[in-house]
Image 1 (tube, helix red, strand yellow):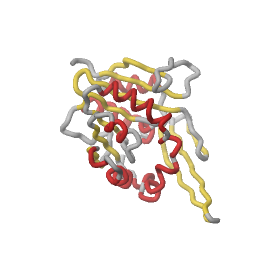
Image 2 (tube, rainbow, N blue to C red):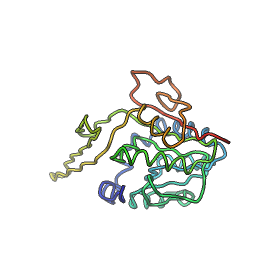
Image 3 (tube, rainbow, N blue to C red):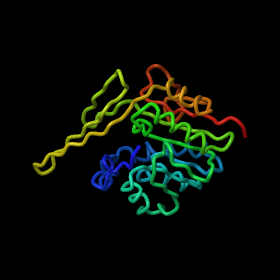
Length: 228
């Protein structure tokens, strides 16, 4: 996965927090941070796709040391400019392959970030990289929501690829942006985790641990690295 300025460059980063304001609401953020703080224990924690710090900043405010990896320099720059942003270690790079010297009690990724990796091999590499950064006994947590149509989505069922397409008209001028994804099922994620040497320990409908059922629109999955 190349540096992601093509899809999350300065034009997007400048208005990202405002365009995703609903996801920054305390009613959305607080349950996620509660769950992750408990999972991290003494820390430290590593976020794949740290972005502008929607989760990393409040998690750090709970006393958990957080490092983030993100492939979009413009998004990382926004994180670093925020109050408390200097306390978040941030590395610009591909979270499928970027290697850090530290080991973590928790590696996490939220809001469908795994889908930004558009090949199955790349997604497996993300799990391998998460496992490589975990201490024995540490946990990897992934949160995935069902489809959210800000504009419209195109799906190719045969390849599990999709694109989210955004059309905006401001002061009579139109703009169009398309972002590619690869959607993935929980069972496939479990297989990727197993390939990486992790094992499923929990799966919930959401951050507040509602049961995961066939009617669930999303899931919080936790895989553990054996040992510790």
